[in-house]
Image 1: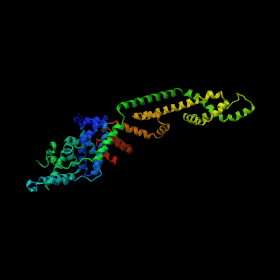
Image 2: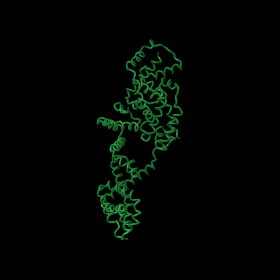
Image 3: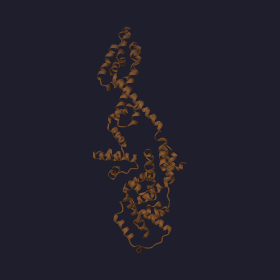
Image 4: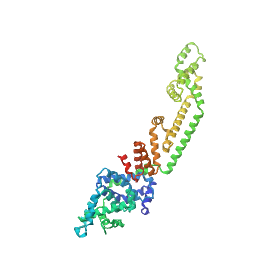
Length: 183
Length: 282
């Protein structure tokens, strides 16, 4: 019975004092949130800290939750806000020139690119490296899409960017990942 | 598919890159984090706010307290003369014992005169003190001092001058107690008007608060006004709240803006803090 409830219903139930509803909600989203944080921040200690912080804030704000917002969006919005705070203290973004250089290489004819058949293991390794090397905004957009399963509008809502900007970030992220596979 | 086209990524499952992503190691949070989060969620439910029914009770209770305080304040506003009149005679016998001791000692030797007792001099001496303490606060202090000092006094009074003592002695106790209560009620009313902006919970506890706390509030008026402002900010919609914080910045009230923004982040963790305000959080 309980498993049929939507995330939004569970969150409202928890706001009304139903602890089991929270446990179910937590079980559903703990992995997604943790991986989003871990792959965005790239440090386990940071991910652990922000993971707990995200849930703490969600718990504190439970009575303000309104089901107009999808629960995943609400949760990842909180996490993203914390990530942004953390990023502000870290290194600057990759330059546009660097990104364009990646595109120039990708736009080269297929024949000019080295043909490689990568093993499964090698593919995963390269994807992981590519993710780590992505500029923060692109990595966040990519992870919100692939890990969080969010659409352009929802990603835009969370990151405060327009639809086209989000699309552009995803495009750049994809290009960089492919570039990593091509080298 | 062009390398620049993200449509593949936007398909259900994220296309081929999405498939590859899902084959990456699927990290999960450690168990200690699970425990910490679930404990926190449980604590919030069990020891956080009372359920709605109880909140109603608290609300009704505080409303009843307010009505009582208002009633008392109204009464005190309509009976200032009667309280003055009654206080004067009640205080007289308390001071009496100090002076008449000699006279009564003499009286033991001279004559057993009942008319001689110290009633007139006693009545004469306290008014001097009372005149000096003409203000209400002064009167309160005098009453408190006297009630503290007079406790050991009554025995000689009862022994030497039985007639005036029973008439006056029972009166001071209830009156001084009443006065203190009424003053508390006044304080409560004053602090209510201070926090009229919207601190419903704060007012509920006022009836039981010690007088010192109300004095402190009066002494530092910026503290409650600041918290009242913050509570008022909480009523604003997120966008209006941020606009208000910007206004505070423009007015040079940086500290207030910072406090308000911190509260904003706690209240709306899902709202982004605009770039121009982020510096306040650092």
